[in-house]
Image (cartoon, rainbow, N blue to C red; front, side):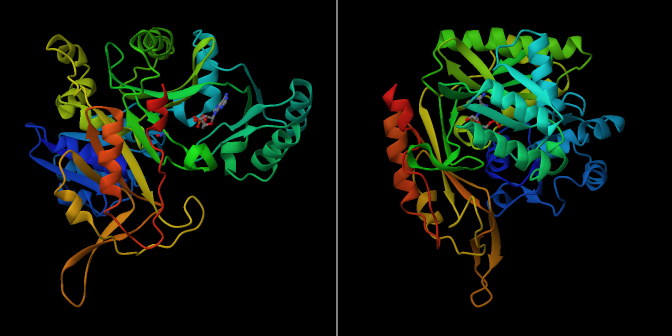
Length: 433
Ligand code: AMP
Ligand code: GLY
């Protein structure tokens, strides 16, 4: 098979790495890819949102399956475009991708189909939103309706903070038109977990549970980031809880979408808060999580490409009949090494050292995110330099979560680039449980 993966982050490197292990994969392309992906796939210079160019490429190169990493091309309708030309693609169509692209859509669906989530109200008027905040009090959560690169959520501890959030999103338009409407919802307390499944609307295959670390500093301090690390499994998700999440959240959501006329195919990701009253949805994503995927896929023994192909052909049931997905019982931890200044401003082009040393380590793999391969003009040797905020996802397995943590940080300590910073407590929450 000829496979095209769309994206350039750590998630896409993990996908390419896993797809490369499939006996079905003959040739892998990645658009646009990064300095690490280029070792396993041919990187092509097309941006993730350039749908006409991606379509032309898939037609010309006779791609058998396209796998979409990020949400933007999905919500822009890449699946509909590919379907028009009978090109096989793994992901939901534009209408179904609203589940992530519009929080109003997602909340209305959850309310209609009795899917547990925080109580909420929708506003398109600043004064009414502010009046509601005064009435309801704080804490509360203010969310922009549309896509905001994972930054459109403000957890407000006071009434003033909540009103300020409304002003920023609706008046100052810090997320552009994504803030034309907002949601104000109750603040939930508990432990977070990510549940990611593959589905073709008829059947569901859950991947292993995981947990992300969104804040930049240890102890969940500092600003929100795209994710500073993850681990899998998340012991907070016991097998009973996993079952409850599937029944009350995942199946109801997929059935609800079908009843609304949407045949959902691809990945469904539920960000869950495990509250005293049970699991509740924080958000849905219509794609693999980043950095969760980096911590999940090294534990997957089965062929991911085969399962994604089956889902896109509405034949996921066949994979289930032949045994479903097989998992390594070991734990996996992925630590993000970020550029100095991230999630604020940062510089690019810093040379990364230590990757060869880490490549010799057992049960460790480094997924590249913001990296680029350059040729040293003096020696003509290739070198890897930083090219983004989140640079690497250093990932390690261990018999226990503590062993996985030790193994991973031993690798992190071998890697260096100017300004590099990382959290030192990835996975610690799993030990405390
Ligand atoms: P989201 O992008 O909707 O997942 O929100 C980003 C982060 O904001 C989540 O991972 C939570 O930490 C937090 N969050 C979102 N909704 C709520 C809520 N209703 N209560 C408490 N925290 C929330
Ligand atoms: N890890 C959070 C996300 O992928 O949206």
